[in-house]
Image 1 (cartoon, rainbow, N blue to C red):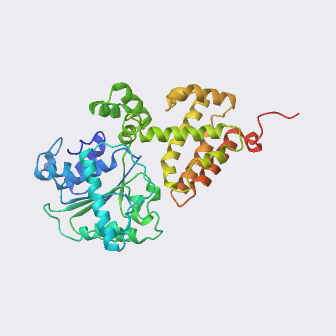
Image 2: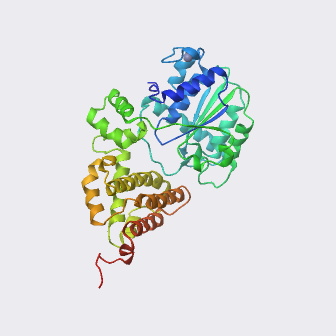
Image 3: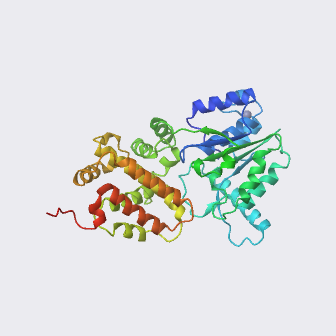
Amino acid sequence: MSLHPVHGHAELRTTLATAHRAGTLPSALLLHGPRGVGKQRLALWIAQLDLCSSPSEMEPDCTCRSCRLAVRLEHPDIHWFFPLPRPKRAGSPEKMADALEAARFARIDDVRAAPLQPPAFETASGIYLAAARSLRKRAQSRPSMSPRQVFVIGDADRLVPQEASPEAANALLKLLEEPPADTRFVLTSSAPGALLDTIRSRTVPLLVRPLETGEVIDFLVATGVDVEAAETAARLGHGSIGRALGFLPDGDDPGPMETMRREAFDLLKAALSNHLSAGFEAGLARGVSGGRMLVPLLAELEIWMRDLAAVAAGHPDAVVNRDAVPWLTRKSRDLSIRPDVATRTLARVDEAALHARGNVNPQLLVAGLVADLQALLQGPRAQAGTPVKTHG
Ligand SMILES: [Zn+2]
């Protein structure tokens, strides 16, 4: 198997190819944009473009040796790094580095076997110091077959998430600061705000926009998904093929994104309930660890909040979660939700998402968030903890 062709982003690719021809492509690029929108695929495409023996003819499918190896993820001068779970029982730093490299190659094998995968939500993964050292070692050696080598670093904001040590980032920083000749770095991030300032300042940012819904539908249908399912997944996917894939059921499994959407809906229900204990109960439903899992969950909650505001403003056509329009309409009416509520609730969800990136107790975070949303959405009556009733 080989990578599927890059879908969409035509304008961006033209810009990149033009810069490449002119020799002005920066040596360190940062592709940022929504999760699952195809940033790492695009980064691998840049690597392919960079190493192709006849780049002017690369589109649509160059058959030069370099390109053939690149799309099979077998090019010895394209090095793809990404967050991985911390290996168990890796005593020494050398063993840790070996275990991470083995895990990296195993994951690349998985992608080669099944290039189209929905997002996976892993609680404890990162780009660890040992991986950054392996990367540096490779960067300091000569390319194997091409005149240059390219490093793709996916989710670069996940450098050393737990170690609270800037060392791994520093190993990478030194490289970005003084890149070895004939080396290019393409970093990607769906949370550029979480990148270290020093990394941000050494890379040229390039926004990767969401695709048109029609582009996502076409892509899914071309891979064999039936039209109706493709339309629903594409709408929920918000211009992101990766997200859309996560809304496609696989047997009894509703898909990872659909599971996340339903969990986020439970939070919305709690925020709209008039029980004082709703926040407490929502908190207890979470584990005591794995705060990072809350990041994608809160992103889904944001969409629910926007939908609620859309219904309150009389625009049910703008709702993403269309299956919930009748429910949202009823709740919005019963609780007299104000259309401007989105501004305040979204700021609160954003704040929670920021905390979720750090070391946080998910139970406390969710309990606090739901209680605050109750107050923002329903005013003092929810805070008072009594059924809605006027006194006097
Ligand atoms: Zn080629």
